[in-house]
Image 1 (cartoon, rainbow, N blue to C red):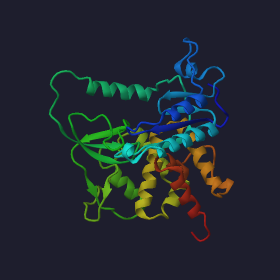
Image 2: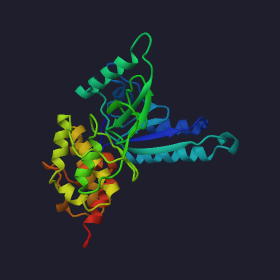
Image 3: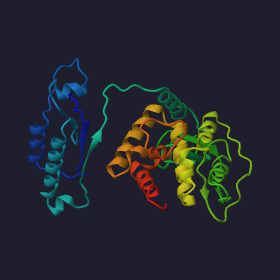
Length: 317
């Protein structure tokens, strides 16, 4: 498949059990140019053809190098759903989605992938009688939440289903915000156990331990980077709840995201910042040694981070 300089596009059509009219499939096949081709090629290249620009991956998943083709296929799908009768749509809610993707046909697993897969197989592949279920707290470095799980050995996050987790036996804890400097308060509430845990703060909760001991080297290094960073000065100006969320996000980015992903996220966030009128001198496209607010974008999303950056850039803020 020939990939355009602007990347690939995907159209996802979920009929939710409704039967699309045959006209849609005719138009789709006429426009999307599905071919089979040389069996020595991978399925993506084979379906697209050497000169092709699109491929029907599954019935409702079309990948193309052309944005205009993606948009037209989405329009045709929407029009087809509109033609269905009320009876045909009863209890069904068809949807059409479109977006950019960065697709690589030859997947290569990382060391982290291998470690996660090994952990999953050790739990799910265990034969014989399983140990009795007990309560665990699962802290997820993908959705930045802590949730309770009743299982003999949890393997993924009950909120987002991600596998980049820490777990400990026991129940969810709450703490009261101990007050004082936001970084010190964040460290006291997040590292009261064996690893980072996004504890919920409640006014009537117990006071977190005064002494902070971070047992993981990678977590200790990421936490130390925050002290005196450009991000911290700005985070200290935020409301406490927002400040804690930013500290979680920046910490996760530096502790648990690889450099390539961090750089890609930085470029995306900087682009969003510039599009909304941010000064080109206010964001570094190369990663600074100490974190800035852009580091929070991977967890919090570029738009929310950019909104705070622009707000703090206003005179008098």
